[in-house]
Image (cartoon, rainbow, N blue to C red):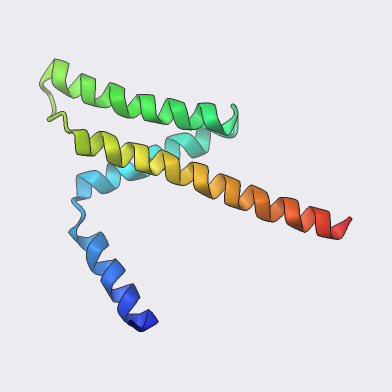
Length: 101
């Protein structure tokens, strides 16, 4: 598979994801990202996941939305993506600082 084919395949996959699921993913990523500025990253990710649970409970209790396990999983995926990105960037910065000293 060429790089162009891989990109086209990934783009097709992303297009097939429902808009609602993309919003849940973005919410998990954003909540964890913003909270990391104020609290340790693991707590921030935990809170983002709890917000995902709370949203689905709210949907079920109020009947204003449709509670879905998939929504919770997409929110969690966004939060865990933040965690992965955080540690990758932290590792790169640490190596860079170590190399300079």
